[in-house]
Amino acid sequence: MMELEKESKLVRTGARKKQRLTWLRWVAAVAAVLVALTGCSQPKEQAGQSGQSGTSQVQSGPTQTGPTQPDTSVPNAGTEASGVSDQGSAALPPEALVSASQLDQGIKAKQAWQIIDVREPSEFASGHVPGAFNIPLGKLEASLVQVAKDKDVILVDLNGTRSFTAWQELKSKGYDARHLKMLVGGMEQWKSLGSGEVTESIGGC
Image (cartoon, rainbow, N blue to C red):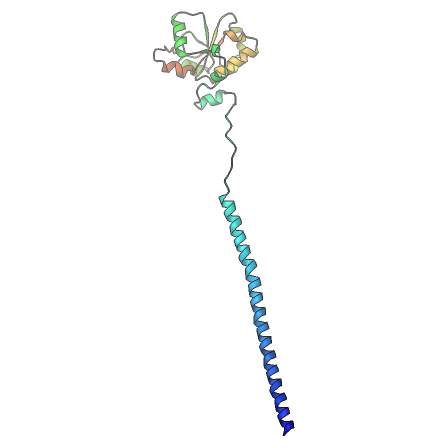
């Protein structure tokens, strides 16, 4: 009888241990699954947050650009053809500039000026300042013998750009800058004067 009771106790104890071991294994398995799920989800979430943060920083970063530099190029016939008016006069000393009204007064007072129109012959023929004669800018160097050195020379073009180039060229050829002048605004300014007479001719020289 005693032996049966002991055997019964041993059986019950073994069953409890077996149940306890099974329960511990189950808890361990659940914990492993939770750890695995938590460990995988956090890096992804953090990576997503860091990616969003980087994107927001890129989007919110201001675009910096340098200040616009002014155009300091020397005006030429190309800028004149595009309608840019009288840029060359800004680079010349004040005494080298003649306004349309000053030119008009000088012509009426019969000033001993030589007025040279450096436009093309067709432009010159369509209308020019009275008393002017035509030496196109491209032929100026070959026509220096016609340019006076003992009187003031007034250079005229459409709006002041080619005459600026002519002024520079004559100065580089040894002409006295004190005798070289240019009409500010060219023929455009002369025509806008109202009282400025325009002479038409056929051809040019």
